[in-house]
Length: 166
Image (cartoon, rainbow, N blue to C red):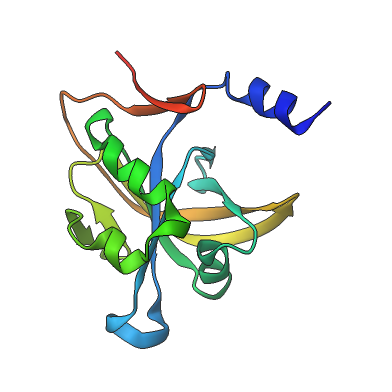
């Protein structure tokens, strides 16, 4: 099986879209925010409440989460497609510019940016990191959540593009 065949098969799996964020505390409150779009995000356990996100090994987010255990995820709405696209282009723009005009608030538990208007937000503390091929599976204990009531449905990723679920 080739990488292209595997990629084509996995493109048939619809996935929700989240923005994973963390605040680099190395410089204290003035530290930089880091974010990445993720479609490999799932619930692992109810008791204790655990979620998992897959992060490219050696990426800025992977390096930060290896040092700093607090992070957050914002479940994006279909109307937040531009946010997902912005953070998926990660290597082309600095994180400071990515967050420049983004409507966010600080998480009370994680200090990470939470996207205003997201369907849900989850603030997490890393419990475990597992190397899996060219990615790190980061399992986080959920410390706090918020949910929103909105007419806008979730943003999904299917066959290589963002989709609105009706």
